[in-house]
Length: 194
Image (cartoon, rainbow, N blue to C red):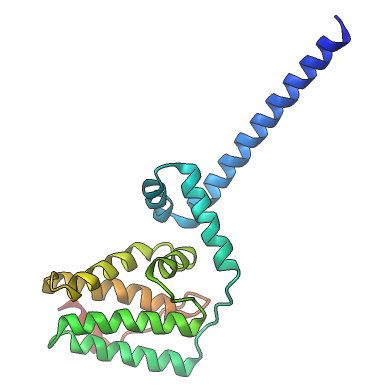
């Protein structure tokens, strides 16, 4: 066999090895992102319309988040925000729309103090999806209900659900870097379930 045939075979083998290696690396990347983002991975794939675009978006979120310095709250700040939450929750009985708006604003204030950029909702949701992928869909739902409420298009049950969703994220944000959740006093638990 002539030398150029051997060279051609070697080139084909190298190309096949490169294709297999690239495929394995993409599979690992996909698996890593699926594990990291959970249901948010699937939502992003649906929204983007293709896996490659979704994975680029998720990688971009990771890169953006890695440039942030997220700080845990000081114990006094945690206590102050937990008290503010209890106040908002207590106002739900008299004015559900105002309580939901207050909950939305409390989440933003806590995010700001922890070091998250708060410029727009999509940026906030993207950052939340990196640190708290298990609750970002709740945050999106709560935000949508809050916006509907501002337009007068939310029922009391919707607003109650928004408070539950906001509380889930709020607890994670107050918990600090170790994910510790705030303890709800027994009287607040009764109000929550009502």
